[in-house]
Image 1: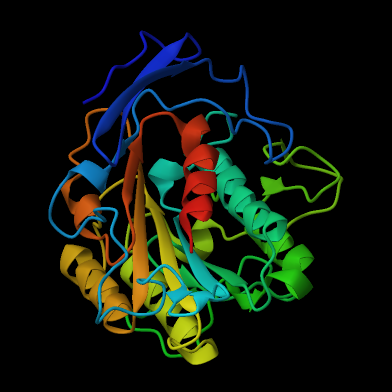
Image 2: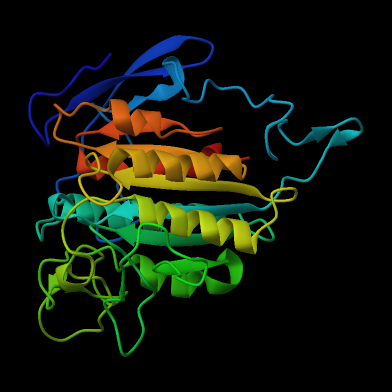
Length: 331
């Protein structure tokens, strides 16, 4: 159940559900423009955010008590007291199709970058030995990590990438590789022009420039094209988590962001297969939808696995708050 504000930038309200069943109406005024840094804009409640906590199907219902599930389902408690929390390994998977793009401050891609940087911040602010983070990007194709010779990456032209076909930001230790992860996360940038590259820390995260400055590498339409095919990026994420972590000792998850249903490659069936493969390996899946307010979210909801939850919003500026909340929910 949603209560929506009249127009963007006016006071907007939303109804949120929690367990035990309680509905809370809260209001917030969004910022006048995207934050100069990804740590801003983290307050308030989205007027259009929905979660799967009160729904059915595969969505998270608030319980971590599955006897046969992977690590994390018992809440980290033992017979003799509270056991140490396990390290977390999370792969972020981000839609870079043309509908996400734009150079305006309100474009979904700008706030997707802020959201993923916020997630990294959250793990750094609650450090735990062994925490790992990585990111896979996709449009028609997924992409390899950038190199000096190929700053836009190299397209992965298969829906079933091998372990050696690494994602844009391979899974890495948060405490030791935070700066490199942050540089790669700034690659979530408009793909429409080879000149519209995001700056690194010497400029606001959302600012696009065509000359000067220090460039952050990012994929372009020439590399990953423009359609929506999540399957290869999701499988890159699974490969990273399975190869580099142990399900018996690490809490593993995928946080997926898109603004629409698959329309290329393996389509919906291939995407569903990929999240099924994730859960078969004990990897929880969160699904986040940013949309125009009239989108049928059934397919994006269906991608949730394990402890994951679904979140949908029509307000791009609210994505960092959603990501911050998901980070706070991790065991």
